[in-house]
Amino acid sequence: MRIASANKTIAFFITLSVVLVLLAVGLNVGWIVLNWRRVVPLVLGIIFFVVIIAGLVLNTIFLVREIRRNEQQDSFLNAVTHELKTPVASIRLYLETLERRQLDEAQRRQFYGVMLSDTERLLGTIEHVLQAGEARHGHRRADWGEVDFGALVKDAVAAPSLRHALPSGSLRVRDRSEGLLLVRGNPEQLRTAVTNLLENAAKYSGDKPDIVVNLITPNIDTLVLSVQDRGIGIPRRELKRIFKRFYRAHTARSGPVKGTGLGLFIVRSVARQHGGDAYAKSEGEGKGSTFYLRLPRVHRRESA
Image 1 (cartoon, rainbow, N blue to C red):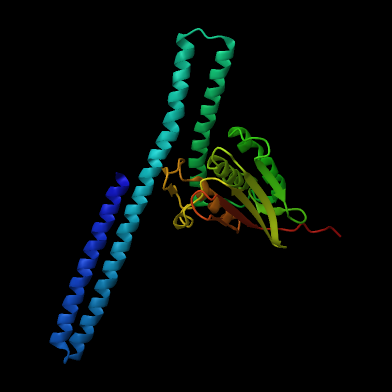
Image 2 (cartoon, one colour):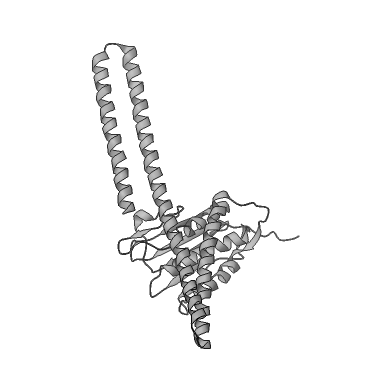
C-alpha cells in the first residue's frame, strides 16, 4: 500500500511538472511571437524560459528523490522493527513457558538453544545498524595495518555455515590467487564485509545451497573475492540499487526480500574506504548471483 501511494505521489509531481513545462513553453512561444522584432525582450524571455524549465526539472528530481528516500526509510524501520520484535517475542514466550511449566532437562536445553539463537539474531540486527552508521561516516586509519585477507576469508566461512546449518560441502572456498594476499586496512571492518557477503549468499540460496567463494588476483596489485550462489537471483534493474542504504531488492514471487537493507551497503562502504569497490552480477530471478569485493593488494617488502 505504501509503495502504491508513493508511486501515485511521484506520478502526481511528474504530471504537475509536465503541465508546468508545457505552460511555460506556451508562454515563451507567445512571448517570442509578440516580441520577435524586439531583440532585448526576446533574449530576456528566452533566458527566463530556460531558467524556469531548469528550476522545474530540478524541483521534480528533488521531490522524487525525497519520496524514494522516505519510502526506503519506512521500509527500513519496518524491517528493523520486525527483526527486533520477532526474537524478543520468541524469547519472552519461552521464558514464560519455563516459568509456568515443569519441563524435563531435554526440553529445557532445547528452549535455551532457541533463546540463544534469537539472542544472536538480535545482536546481529543491532550490529548491522551500528556498522552502517560507522560505514557512513568513515573510519580512522590510525588502527589500520597489514591484513592477511586470504586467512581472514577462510576463517569467516565457519560462522555462516553454522548459523544457517549449511550441509557439508555446500560452501566451498577456492583459492586461485598467487602468493600472500595482503591488504592494508581495518581487520574488523574487512571481516564484517566478508561475513555480510557470505551471510547474504547463505540466506538467499534456497533449500539447496551451493555457494562457491573464489579468491582471485587479476593482476599483481589487485585481489578479488567473489561469492557465487545459485539462489533466487537478482532482477537486472535492481543490480545498481542493491548496495544503497536501506534498499531491499524485490522479486516477482516474494516481493521485498527480508533483512534490514544494510548488509550490502556496509560491504560497498568498507570496500571504498579501503580503496576498492563492490558490485554484483546476475542473469535474473532464479538464476543465482555473484558478488564481488575488489581491494588493492599490498606487497611485503623483503628485508635486505
